[in-house]
Image (cartoon, rainbow, N blue to C red; front, side, top):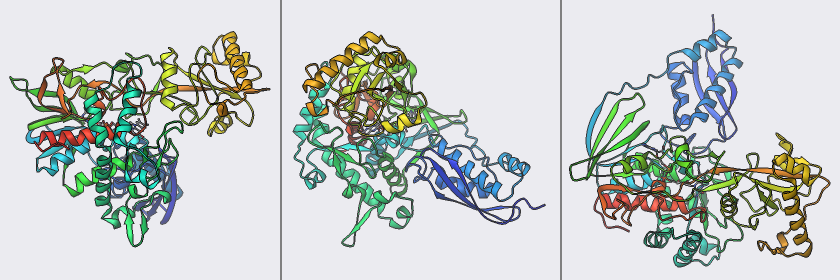
Length: 604
Ligand SMILES: Cc1cc2nc3c(=O)[nH]c(=O)nc-3n(C[C@H](O)[C@H](O)[C@H](O)COP(=O)(O)OP(=O)(O)OC[C@H]3O[C@@H](n4cnc5c(N)ncnc54)[C@H](O)[C@@H]3O)c2cc1C
C-alpha cells in the first residue's frame, strides 16, 4: 500500500526564532526532497555553517528516509523544529500514524564509534567562540598545524547567542556618522567604570585592547569580505532583508560597511557600539554574524580542522610544568589525547551555566542565556595545574523582564529592589541599574508603572508584557502592588510617595535622574513587572599577561598555556559590565594575540 499521496506538502515546527516551514516532496513510498522554505532561525546556530541543522537535516532525512536524526548539540531547537515540520508535511501527504511512527523510528545516521586516540600537532585550541576562532585563524595563517576541539556540534558559543555588538573607538564607521571618539577616550571610560567599586582593572591589557579595537573591527570586516567573496553561496542564504549586503556603484558592500553605530544607552556618550548585521536597536542583534564568517573562513578558506562534540577535560604537563597537550572526551566517551608541540589555547568561554561557581556571587534564582556547555571547564583544568583563577566579586547580571525587554532599554520609570526601595537613577545604562540592584542585596528588581496607558517612562515592550498577563502585574493600590511583590507595603508606599514628591518638583534629589525622565506614575491601577536576574557574562577567571599567557599566583607564566575571551576575564571588568561590545572585542583581540604568540609571531 502507498505510504503517501505523491506531491509537495508543507509543514511547520517551532524553532528558536519562531515558526519554521518545510516543504516536502514525496512519491508513493519515498521522501524525495526536503526544503526549508521559511524560518527565523539565527545564522551560526540554526543555519549558515557546515554543521548546522538547516544544512544537514534535509539531505539526511532523504538519505535515511528517517526522522530519527541525532540532534546537533547547541542547535537542538532548530533541529527539532525541522523534524517537527517534516513530520507535519508527511501527515499532510497522507502518512498514517503507523507510517509516521515507522519513519520516526527508522535507523538514521549512526553515531561515530570513536576509539581512544592519540595525536600530535602544533597547536590545540579549546573552544570555538570568538576567542578560539580568532586564535586558530592566526595560528593557522602562520602555517601551524592547528586543531580546535569544540564541545558542541556547532561553533559560536556565547558569541553566536550574543547581541553581536562590538566596541570601537575612532573608527571609520563612527566618523561616517560624525562621532568623535578615540582609543584614549574609551580607555578612560573603561577604567573609570571598572574601578568604580575597587581596583579591578588591568591597565596594560585594557590599554592594549583599546589601542587595537579599531584594527580588530577592520580585521573582522576583512574576513567577512573574504567569506562573502563566494557571493553565490552566501547570498543564497536567507538573509534578513535589512541585513543583506548592499550593492552600491557596482560594488558589494560587506556587512560591516553598512553597519551603524549607536549608544547602548543614550546617556552614554559618545556612541561607540558597532552593530553586526541586523543589530540596530540597542538590544537586538546577532552574534552569529561574527562567529559564522570566522568559522567559514577557518574551515573553508584555511582548511582548518574542528573536532566537534568533544570536550577538553584536562591539561597535560611535563616534569617542568610546561603544557604538552590536552585530554578530551568524545561524545561516545572515547578519549582523545592531543599533544601540542607549540602550545594550548584555552577559549572555553565563561561559567554562566555552572551553578556552583555562580553561587559564589550575590545572585539567586537567575537564569542564563549562555550555552549549556559554558561551565568553566578551562578554569578548572588550568587551576589544576597551578594557574591563577581570580575570584572576582561579581558576574554580569542584567535584571530583565522575562516577557519583554523591560529593564534593558531606555525605560525611566520607577525601579525598586525586592524590598521596595529605590536604589538607582533608572535612566542609566542597563548594567548600572542591575549592579545597583544586586549590590543592594536584592534578588530581583521591580519596574513600577501606571497600570494603564500611557505607561509612564516605558519605551517599548511593556504593553506586550501586560497583554500576556501570565501573571497579572496590576493592582488597585500601591499597597496591593506590594502584596503581589511580597514586600512591606509601608516601604513601597514610602518609596512611591518620595518619588511622586520629586516628580512634582521636577528634581531627583536622591539619584539625579534628569527632570525630563521623571514621569508621573498615577492610578487608578498600578503595575509591577518583575525583573529577573540573568547571567550573561562571567567576570574574573584566568589571569593572563598581554601576550595571553596564563599566569600563576606568583606572577610567573605557565609555559605553552594561553587563554583568551571570557575564560580569561580577569582585569577586564569591575562589578558592572562597562558597555556592550567589550567582551567580543576583547575575545577577538586576545584570541588573535594568543594565536600569534603561540606561533612566535610578532604581536599586534
Ligand atoms: C545573550 C548575550 C548577549 C551578549 N551580547 C554581547 C554583545 O552584544 N557584545 C559583546 O561584546 N558581548 C556580548 N555578550 C558577551 C559575549 O558574547 C561573550 O562574552 C563572548 O562572546 C565570549 O567569547 P568566548 O570566545 O570567550 O566564549 P564563547 O563564545 O562562549 O565560546 C566558548 C566555546 O567553548 C566551548 N567549550 C566550553 N567548554 C569546552 C570544553 N571543555 N572543550 C571544548 N570546548 C568547550 C563552548 O561550547 C563554546 O563554543 C553577550 C552574551 C550573551 C549570553
